[in-house]
Image (tube, rainbow, N blue to C red; front, side, top):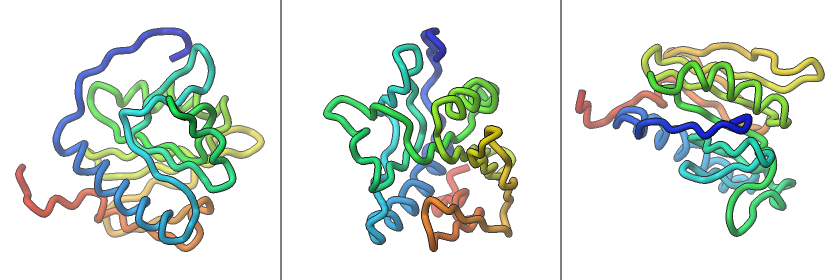
Length: 163
């Protein structure tokens, strides 16, 4: 990121449960409506020579399929989702936010498993603007996925309650 090699520990199990809950919901909706692909890490997103990231979840809209190459995603996805963890939270909220904004990622969602919230940022002329922070009992939608409504509680649901 910005030319620095960054290493981080593997995600925790609940992090991956949240990723799969959201990715599954997004993928089913996007494919069912012919909107594009939903992909998950590990997968390189090459924004520039100095900025190669691996977001937890990526949405590539139908109109931008040319960014998908044999090796990676070469260009800015329409939507990037980072599920925050203790090891990555500050980097996701500050460094990656600036990188995604600079390279034109249209929406950036930050999902916080600890606080059980979802922060939605949308790209505007002046940069990212907040579309809100949503908690269980609330829902949100995205103009990138017309007709989709996400219930926040569904993202943090663990049917086996291992914790």
